[in-house]
Image 1: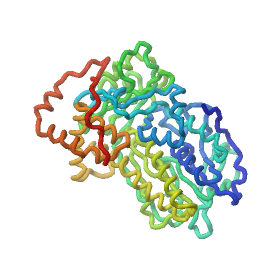
Image 2 (image 1 turned 135 degrees about the vertical axis):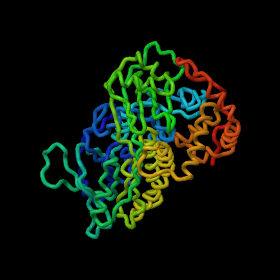
Image 3 (image 1 turned 45 degrees about the horizontal axis):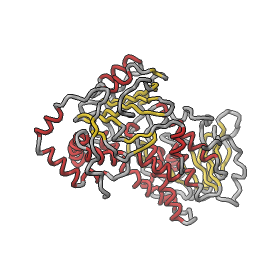
Length: 494
């Protein structure tokens, strides 16, 4: 196990041009992934972060959602092991449970509780704080990587022609600094500072034009509370998902197991149906879900925290790839470019895929950074296509959603997906395909392959079967699922 803890280090020689230096704005997950791949290409990497990093797996102000469920999807876990070999074992040693998302998770679809089987879609479930801390520990052991906490980045620095970014201007947050700030020179700058990133403003001020934005808001809010898993818990599940049903049932819920034998329970409501943050209201909201199983699990559990709320959930996409010009030496990624409705759990995994795309782009550049930055923004736009489609197409199901209306193609997609999600609660093959896409290990086209398409057509042509299935009484609360054999379809390659 890595024992090192990142500390504030002096940024010595940051203006020394003898070595190549990369700088990352933001020390959250997107910034940490980025720093790891930048170390493959630069002599020094500096992570500039507003917060003071905690000494352990603790909540920090700069990650307000850390108190809510954070799912590292299966694809994200794969990238984690690729960039940090053995880190999954460290999470296991810290008490992070292992979850097979079809065997160990009780999933309540519109048609009922989904079948249980070995899917091979396995992750470690842990708190966001533990995951970040373990990654920071790993990075702290790399002598090429330096943390510079408690600093605000105020602006970019460019060459005289304004064609290349040469660093940033940063200032300490403790109030001791005077003047406009200190210039930190760098050959390459990555903006991973999240939803409030200033890169679009900085570029516009330098004549690069206004960055187009797409914002789609379903006005979803959620509330979370942490519980001690009951000592006498006898359920045969580790996690629980209860899906909503657009446009009728706006409410959803999840029980997510984390280290130290705790549950994070997050309740969500779309179209401004926000879950309350008082105890009685929170429990009443849980009881109102499509099935009472989640409520039954937590009603007598020991609460460990207050109830935390969050409502900043709009999908926001900044189209940097459309700018007519782009400065050399600058890239943006993560929520600074594409921020999703967090209820779909795609943020960390998408930023991991973005870091891999950055690594590929820098390798292809072969040391020539002149065109690498702009090429990366184009590559990143392609990386973001699938998760953006998954999030926004679902949010368009709610009539109250703002930011555009679904076109005819999207409406047809919704009708098809209604059949898919209903079948996912009935047939292992479809549930496997559905979760493959949800966890970003397969493309959405998986859901249109013959093994799924045929089942959808059969269900559409056999309404009597739908009535019979929908009329079945829910399984007992203590065990709200049924186990089945391995599905005969595991989602073929595209």
